[in-house]
Length: 295
Image (cartoon, rainbow, N blue to C red; front, side, top):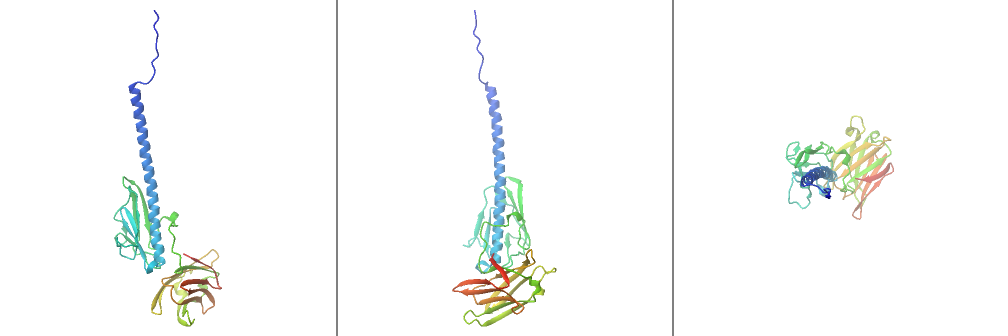
């Protein structure tokens, strides 16, 4: 008698369980790797965003937006750009950046003198309380980034110098590209005139040599001139371009009153004219100035 022999096919229960176990391990590894990758991306993006807020506060302080300096308040889950030196959580002008759930600032932050507020100086943009900000992933403290702020208000993230938020663009912060080097002049004069009668009001003469650095490559003056009982606080500083021509940065807290002429050595070289025309400040780059641009 012949017997039919049938080949066995399919998988045993043990084989199926082994495959399920292996697939589960692979999925777990993939999920963990995916979360780790997302955490790294979130950390990087948060650091960039914090850096942008710091630069925004510095830019607004340099331009004295709303007549004041601007600062940054740090908390574990957010940063807040605020006006002035004292943080008020209810102030309507606050700008808040809230982090994703798994990112935090390691508190307290390490700022000179203590505290959680980075304070920028109006018109100058420097800070008296530089320090370090450490940002990390909550469930993986090994993933951490640090932002270092120096006394000039500059951050360590040199690759992220440009903020997605616009810098302040108005007549308070202008740059004048001269076709000469300011160190070759003796006196920088600021002359205000009455806008209606064009009569002389006040002239403030600045000794250029007294405000040059050691190698005479940078001019930097900050002062206050009282015009019609209004404090005109200003900063004028410079750097040299590739051809050793001066780029002069003029930062004004007030621009709304009186015509202002800026020149050197009793008009030997004219630099700029500020004039209020129908409520708008018009800035003219004079004959010895190649170009004017805003911050």
